[in-house]
Image (cartoon, rainbow, N blue to C red; front, side):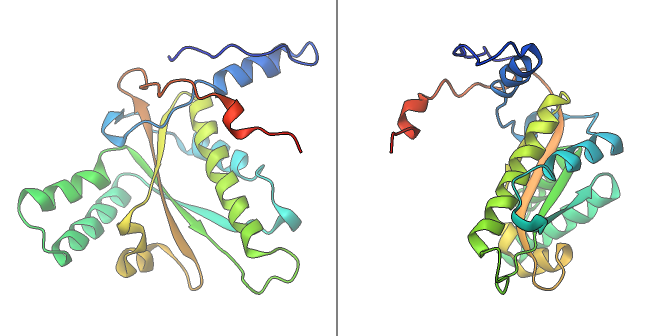
Length: 201
């Protein structure tokens, strides 16, 4: 596990909170090629969704949902990726790599946004903020349960046929969370000085 950054003194004696914060500060994205079985169980996915629902959400719009692929679901996702590759001129080993991209992690969770541009109370940017918060809470929850995870997107998330396989009318495919057991410690990206994102008003 990566080294835990030094924490400043916390405002109160909160050992549970300090332990949770230290664990959070060891989270890094883990590439799908380093994720193995076992993947998150149904119970773990449920807990992940509960954590996602704790994201800041003005008026409780819940502008997101998840679609979970494992087993046969991964086979269907792989077929979509292979078809995507074929339509973009790939063949042979390149097509096999498209399949591998879908099959590397034992569980792949599509993140679907349900943004309502006509909402007169909650503007679009706030709805998207909730989606991002839900993703962050989801990957953090997976980390807390001992799994590696990474949010991935790219051109495939915008492909009309792949989108149609995931989304209902008016929805957006944001991307996928790849999740599973890490085959080794995650690669730390080094400490980033918070001073670069903090300023007085």
